[in-house]
Length: 153
Image (cartoon, rainbow, N blue to C red):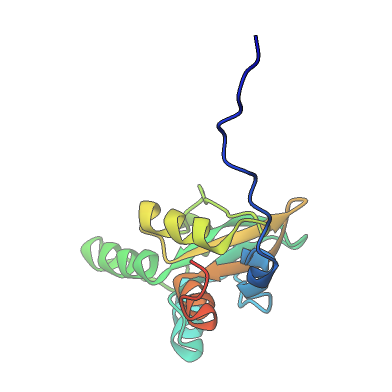
């Protein structure tokens, strides 16, 4: 008995689309980072001066320890007022988010966009071999989309 193959012919890869667009193509590698022992007041000053909404916290070996954000700082302001405690001695390590989701630098930029939508986060650090190597933000995703101009969604 003979069988007929009704499957469609295999489509050749369209070389005009080029290689996939990766997170590593758009991630920021020159980051403003914070140390666990820094004061929250110093972090607030750096966030304002650098016009950023947060950043990774790393130890002396460049390993990711957490993330500190404007929201973490605002929470500290509220708590210090409520408990009538000075903020001068408040350290990053007590107010940073310690459970941090990361993104692989080899992830497709469109998969990263989906992860942003699902998580409602503003930034994801990229870690390789335990060390912080970059960060991707929602703004970086927008830049990637603009560069593509919708040509190969």
